[in-house]
Amino acid sequence: MNRKKIALIGGGQIGGVLAQLIAQKALGDVVLFDIVEDMPQGKTLDVAEASRIDQFDVSLKGTNDYKDIAGSDIVIVTAGLPRKPGMSRDDLLTTNAQIMKQVAEGVKENAPNAIVIIISNPLDAMVTLFQKVSGFPHNKVIGQAGVLDSSRFSTFIAWELDLSVKDVNAMVLGGHGDTMVPLTRYANVNGVPVMEMLEKKYGDAAKAKEVMDAMVNRTKMAGGEVVKLLKTGSAFYSPAAAAIQMTESILKDEKRLLPSCVYLDKEYGAGGYYVGVPAVLGENGVERIVEVTLDDEESAAFQNSLNAVRSLVADMERLGF
Ligand code: A3D
Figure (cartoon, rainbow, N blue to C red):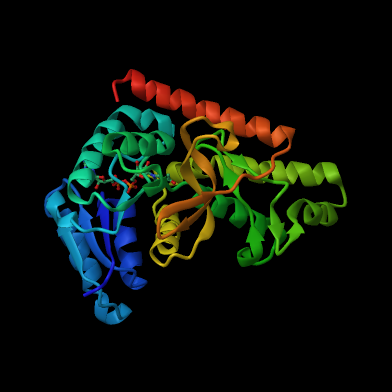
């Protein structure tokens, strides 16, 4: 059997949706790992029992044993605590760093050739830590944040302009926190600049800017908006959908240009940090990093976000990770 194998580390809210989406899209066989006994076995059984209805033949296995992830082509990590109302992503640092260290050791030992997508927060620090502990090549350790943040931004633009989100192209760069950088100047609807459409709608450049600023702020706070409403956890449908888009691009070698948390050395003057920028994702993981031309204001915002990532990583190192 030549099916791809996808291991999901963490069988909570996002892990469960990931298993279902992978099955429905028949992307490959699924192994769902969690430390909680029986739960991943129960979730995969539940998803598998929809196979007749959804017409898929992939196998699904729940497990508490890392050995079952052997031979995985892709590993998606959601292990870790989600936010509660009032918490920032960075508040999760100590607990999730301990978990991520264990996960990196388990993946290194059992699936050394996998390409890894991290979703656990605080995202930029968790990707950094996974790569450090596993020693995997940088092109094979990627964080998911930008695809989701960009989808949120695109959704708000579509609602504002009252048109299909399918035609909206908008990208968010930077770290996955309040300093993220939605690129307003590049945002367009099938090539037509969003700013131009807003100016026509309101007949006033100042009002158009005000509306765009509000969408930018909502994008930055979008994760917290969901946390506040859910009260018991954070977003899970949309982060899972985002990681699936990245997974598909890698497994099918689509080479899509997706905003991803990737390792930057000389690019963007980052000097050895993981942060969100557009990257081509294909069968080798990160195949290319695309440097967007930023004006002074965008560049300052990106540097500010990079500094936030630097200080988060420094905090993590001070904690001994
Ligand atoms: P949740 O439903 O709590 O699932 C996390 C799972 O991790 C639980 O089932 C735990 O049992 C499991 N777990 C804990 N410790 C370990 C361990 N050592 N090994 C393996 N599994 C373990 O959370 P969730 O699925 O809602 O969110 C998962 C993570 O994703 C959290 O850190 C969130 O903050 C993060 N998240 C990121 C984004 C991004 O866009 C980056 C969006 C939403 C959530």
